[in-house]
Image 1 (spheres, rainbow, N blue to C red):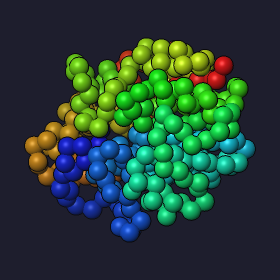
Image 2 (image 1 turned 30 degrees about the vertical axis):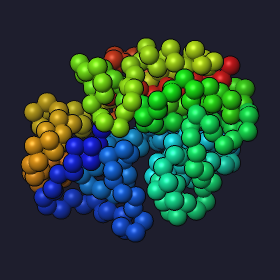
Image 3 (image 1 turned 180 degrees about the vertical axis):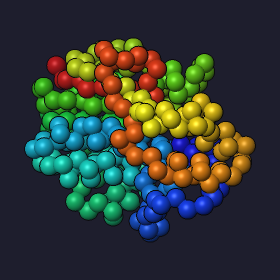
Length: 272
């Protein structure tokens, strides 16, 4: 969920985080996160940590980002030394924005269950914070297997259903069709012809845990509750959210932590 899902709140004070030029910025609709918006910064950094975690896997590899959104993640992977990065996204505005802002990327508009790539044509498929938006998740996994070379990697991050929409039969975020817990995501991947190499979870690190304590137990709830109530944010909440960096999140292996308590799930799977 982003602030935009509930109506972005008015902000107070200065944040120290400069917004992108408006002519280069993709509109914040709530369906995806974008960089450069102070009130959105927590969610952007929570997405960014997954990209930072995989940059050492990118060197010399041909990569598909399936569901590339604003394009910042694909640009990070290209800058990390990928031999090529191809983006596919369904949304016209996102595709046009990515082509404009990141001209070094190859960007296709297309459906993720009918990828415009040849069989066995890429080494790595990245799908971050997207699969929860898809109606036919199994068909998407099958397409990933088709375009990956044998031994290629599929990297997926997605909100953990248990902590993102607790106690609900339907997702809290209106843009999500089906959220997953760790067991459900594992089943989807294994039944799709992949071997699960790692199940990881994204958690709050020490600084975010301290901010949780400061804001009554949850920095997330502090943002959402004010948005739902249409309340202005106090200046210190604005400043705390705007100061979050990707490194404030911890990516922990399920073998060393409680995966069901994670904020987001993050898997590495190998094409059989």
